[in-house]
Image (tube, rainbow, N blue to C red; front, side, top):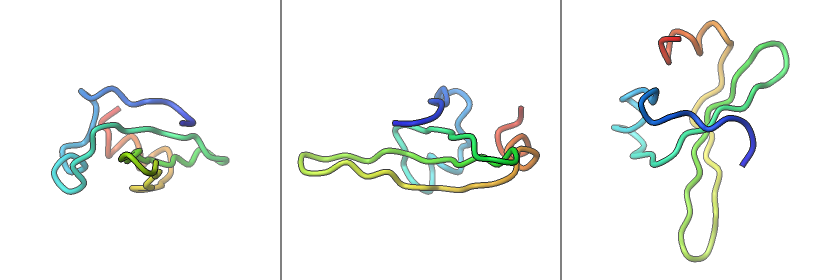
Amino acid sequence: MCGTKIPKRLWPKIYVKEYKITNLWKYDLPNAWRLIYTILEDKIMILNVILEWFSHKDNEKKFGY
């Protein structure tokens, strides 16, 4: 786990609907870009899944802040 865990109340509904996420993380990249990912796990493996990456401005539009 790396970055900032995003509180559930701030999750875009599209992520919940399309990806059925149970957690959401943001990692700050250089030049004000953001990487949004979730962590999937089962008894055998843990998998980080990149959902999107975008500029800080596009991040504000998607999350409304």
